[in-house]
Image 1 (tube, one colour):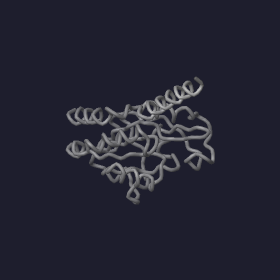
Image 2: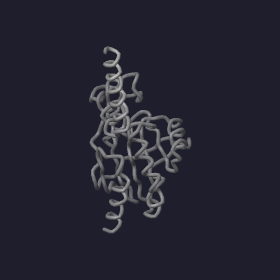
Image 3: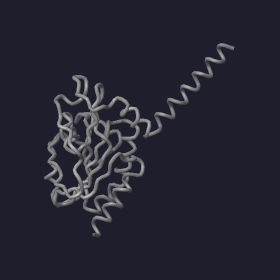
Image 4: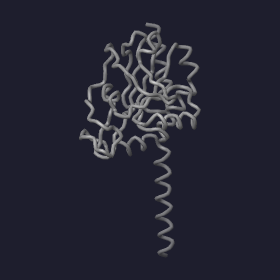
Length: 206
């Protein structure tokens, strides 16, 4: 009887773990559970204190960006003047929700090109991690390494915890003049790419 009961308990635990792993919302909840507004610790990714700002609003000039990409070169937001930029912040490479989100952007990449739009992903992961993530998922857009968290902080998209810090899942659509045209906060990774494409259509017909 004891062995049978133990087997049932193990089976239930396994089922719960599998369900949690497959749920993007659970991934976000797991990351958020340790995030607070406290100070960064030496064990967290950012190495310096970062000024946490409110997210830029529609009509604001987009904060400047200069970060290393998965390709090993420095990327500046100003490099894309004249194009629409979809700047998306996400928690971590290789996690379930972030993988889904990246796959959806990749699947729709030709549609972004048709709209004169480029995609730039930002997280606190290193450029080497981004390189491996892009290779694993065959991503053809750039991922930028915000190791110190300064860009995420400038965009109001940095969650800071005592043991874990990460970029919040927010997206900013920036127009060809470098002005924020649309803001998405706390996005759902599965339908998000289609939401962004619809927003671009609306913005480009105004």
